[in-house]
Image 1: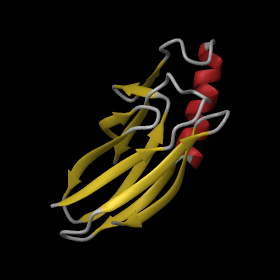
Image 2: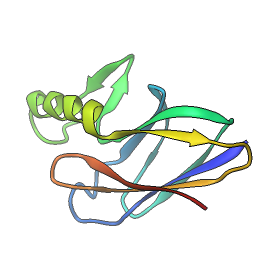
Image 3: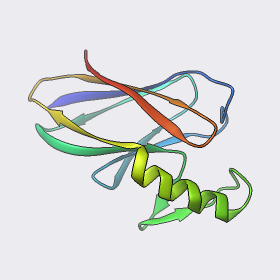
Length: 114
């Protein structure tokens, strides 16, 4: 098993909104502003998505963030396109994923070995 730590830099923008973490389309956790969360993965290749959008049964849910559902859906399309990355995990390898929020959604800045 390997540990993946998602670290969210503290910023004022979207500071009250959690980021949801998805591996291969399945929610594995969330991270609040200025915090980090850790989870375990087996060796393999995974699609990592970190976003302000909470998906339930594959559909975006509006929790009141950003006002109208149109803004959420626009952000959802952008998230699926820009806010995901492929990570390759080796057995026993620990990774740190650094992310922050910009004016639209979250951005994965780095994926580095710990």
